[in-house]
Image 1 (cartoon, rainbow, N blue to C red):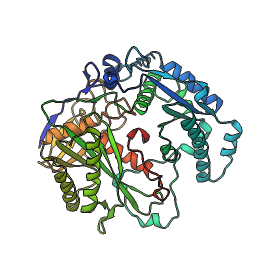
Image 2 (image 1 turned 120 degrees about the horizontal axis):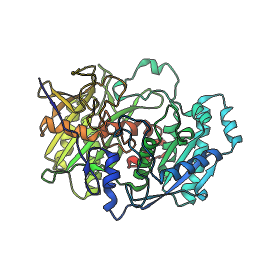
Image 3 (image 1 turned 30 degrees about the vertical axis):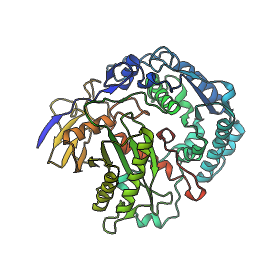
Image 4 (image 1 turned 45 degrees about the vertical axis):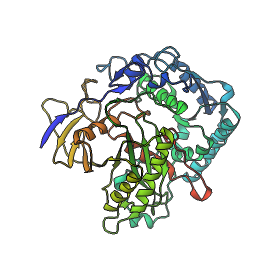
Length: 479
């Protein structure tokens, strides 16, 4: 057994590099500021009650200026001030929000929704109400992103959801088949319903648009996360990218996940998220997965694996006008021989020579070190040539603390097939945990390949193929 610590990966911005997305944007500007196609003004539409729209306007106005850091904080790097969403610094972009691009929901409409006793019916009516306003804005106004503001009573009534199901728990359990249960989730349903409009939406609790709200993130942290998400959704380009090595070949990262249908009776489909070095991705919907008769786990047969990855590589080549030199596939379920064969066939057809097939598993392992803090983020333990433990969460020297509540658990990294060194594969996984434009705190547990494919599946299940509802290929519609 070997133990080492992988150095915190750097991110690239317009004028420099930094380990932290917030500091990188503040000091070096968003990466895509050098691109001519980016927007320098983002039009933010709004849907909500009159009070909610007023709070949204105040919040967006506040985000145009600097917001001070968290008061009396011992970790200033973990809770820095917000640089402001301005044309002269940081995002080099302006937020524009006018009354003409808002749609108001009346108090009588809200009261009528809250009186509906059946929860699923209440959610359906709420989704329909917001969808109709979003459709009007998308079709009749020049806008970039639609913010849907939920009053607290409505949020508590329709949007407080159960814990998300993770991929490891997907099984065709007979207990699900005995109940006539159809999953109904406001957030997922609304995003799926609005997808064909071609305008990303952002769902916000009205209470979150207030200032100095108890038991919530500090205002500066909320501004960092909120504005970075809006920027990415509006521009379709990245505010930061992975650190590049010009001496290494181009890499395409693929995340594959499975998800249950809304009635939980079948594993409906598989999907892939493809990332290039800029963090751009392509969302694809695959075919229904197979179920192993012994362990009840989903998998792809050879032809399905070949077809899914082949389509992904075609989209990659169309976007970048060349094929990647290396492909890395991440899954959270074990690779079957049929999947390996199918993926290999697609890679051979695309003339991709270097390939790495990697499985990421949850573990119950614990590691303790001297002192009061848990292991460092980036701690890498080599158990064997194929099996490794990687702490993507842990103590972060840059923050000067462990920014978590529970003892961190490492990911088990199983290298099924590889053309790259194990340390490089683990370093890439650690770097990919920082490619989440919904959260600017950089110590995420899962790489964006896995996180994205799961998020996409949760929303994609609400698209009805019978109605020819096609998924958007950009991740901004799912985050």
